[in-house]
Image: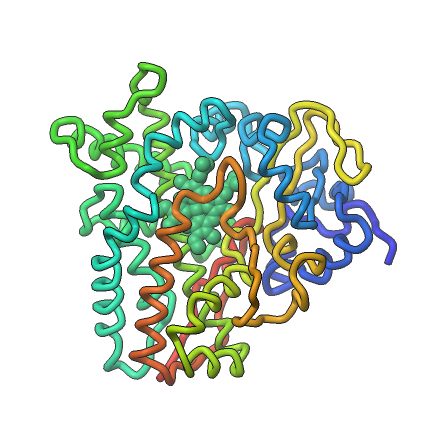
Length: 410
Ligand code: HEM
């Protein structure tokens, strides 16, 4: 197959709609023929793509890993880690986020909240997580069917992020709506006509009120830690606090909800694996969770920008070039994962990178894994006859692999 530059514009959400998710055939071809691919949208697409000057698409796991692990050369800060072009003000805002900091600053900011996410801390709240999961499933069990995303997948991550951050539980619908408006900006049904800038502004006001309360009465929540934290003897600024709040609300919420839904979708699509899992949930569930994360990563990409000239597989990367890290492609790299296109819950070695890797490795990975185990274990044991009632509907996005609706019955 001959490659045309820009033959698929990965910044165009409709490319993902057309392929029903990541364009795996295209990625497979790139891994084989041009693993470090310069993608430049053709002129007729330039109005669609926010990245008009082109970018490198990394499709091999090894390259995605080494770029993520070399923040001194491949920066998250310089242009932010997102695949959209921003004006200077937008970029300056993004650059205050933890996700968009480079070392040495990154480490200092991450340290402020890292302790809230250790395996020990997650183990400590395991009973609370399992109790919530039992209640969520018990609530729908008698109904014979439900809408999986809102009735089962949404509640646990949302409740936990509120509890950890110190957001009153009665406000969780607000957090849900705001974060949907932000990550659903490319999907009219999710953004519900809301202007993402307005939703950010509302989050900002809300966060300021919360911060004022935590200033008065400090507690053990993450927002309180940020409010009272210092970096190099300086208090955290309002902008930094607000951006952390947005990051937590989105990162802790959308991702885990989608991971939970994709897991069940994959079970319905692979009945033999579903039966195997149900034959011994204790034995197969941990591997099945990792395999679902590998097969359908909820976050499809982040980007980096080269701050100096570099070379990857002989391709010359120039300072200022953007690089696209494809998690779905890295996770199906046939050099690393035998039968990489097969969904196999008994896979022995599963080094997927759905939580990223290196400097920015997902802070919430332990927490997400615990939540997935809690809710899915409950679903599989209380509602073992669950089947799909209507085809799932997917979010229009080039960034989040989201499921908007999945009707199930049992
Ligand atoms: C299945 C669920 C999740 C997935 C797939 C996921 C994915 C990711 C990925 C790919 C990154 C790396 C970003 C990069 O390299 O630029 C990341 C970072 C991050 N995640 Fe998650 N995430 C999940 C759940 C969570 C949860 C539950 C939380 C919080 C409660 C969370 C908080 C964060 C934060 C704060 C960062 C930034 C870390 C840093 O910049 O140092 N994530 N996540």
